[in-house]
Amino acid sequence: MRTMKAAVYVRPGLIELADKPIPVAGFGSVVVKITTTTICGTDVHILKGEYPVKAGLTIGHEPVGVIAEIGAGVEGYTVGQRVIVGAITPCGQCHTCLDGHQSQCGGKVAGGWRFGNTIDGCQAEYLLVPDAKGNLEPIPDGLTDEQVLMCPDIMSTGFGGAESGGIRIGDSVAIFAQGPIGLCATAGAKLRGASLIIAVDGVQARLDVARSLGADITIDYTKTDPLTEIMRLTQGRGVDVAIEALGTQATFEQCLRALKPGGTLSSLGVYSGKLSLPLDAFAGGLGDHRIVTTLCPGGKERMRRLMNVVASGRVNLESMVTHRFKLDEIEPAYALFANQRDGVLKVAITP
Image (cartoon, rainbow, N blue to C red):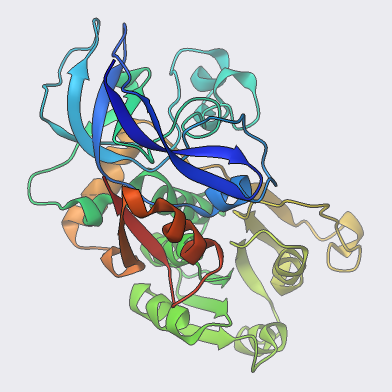
C-alpha cells in the first residue's frame, strides 16, 4: 500500500504529521497531487478544539495541485493538468444546491465544506476530490500557485462578504479586522465600486496592505476610536455596509454601531462563543438593519471567475503570503500562524 504524509488532527491542541494511504479515484472523483496549500483561521479553530472534527482527519481546505488520477465518469480533464479546488465542494444536485445555496450542500449548515471537516483535506501530498466535474477548475497558463492560492477560500470568502453586503457604487464601507479575509473584503469592496473604504485593525503592517488593496482610510484602533472616526468621516450618517472579519463580540458590536439606519452588517467571522445583539446598537430591531452571513462560495465556476480577476491584474494577493514551509514543517507552521507571530498573514505549504 502506497502512503503519503498528511497533517492529521489528533486532539485539541495537537495536529501532527502522519502516514496515510494515498487515496484512489472512484466514480466521479479525482486525485490531485498537492503542490501548494495553506493554513486557514478555521484550521486554528479546529486545532484549539473550538470546532469539532473526528480524530485522524486530514486538515486543510485550500488546495492547488496537479491531477494525478481520474476516476470513471469524469471527462474534460487530463492527468498532469494544473487545477484548483474550492474550499466548498458542492454536489450541485441536491435541493439546497439547486436552490442556489451551494455552500449549504445537502441541507446541512456548512454542508458544502467537506475538506478538513467531514472528509480528508489537503494539508497532505494527495487529495481526493469528490464531484470533480463540478469542483475542479484548470489554472490558466501564466498564473503561479501563489497567485491563485487565495482563490479556494480567503479570496472567495472576502469577496463574498462584499457581494452579500450588497455594496453599491458610491457606498461607504467599513471593514473591521484586516487579517487575510478582511483584506480580501477590502479588495472586494473596491471592485464593487465603494467610494469610501475604511479599514480597521491594530497592526500597522496589515493596514499598509489594506491601503495597497483599496482602502481609502485606515484606522489603528489602538490609537483612535474607530466609531468616533467613522462617524466623523461620514458626517454622522454611519456607513452603508460594515463587514465583520474577525468573529468576536466586540467587532460584531462595532459593526452594528458603525451602520447608518437601513445599513447592512456583512458577517464573515467564525464565532466560537455566544454572540449577542446589544439592543441600542440594534436599534431595538427597528433600524431597518440587515445582518447577513456568508460561507465561502465554492464550485468551479466561482474559481474560474476569481482566477479571471487575478489574471486581469485587478487584484494582486501575492503579498499576503508572508511565510513558506514544507509539509514536513507543518507543526512549526501551525505554531507561527496560530500565535500570529513574525507579522504572518498567510503561509504557503509545499509537500
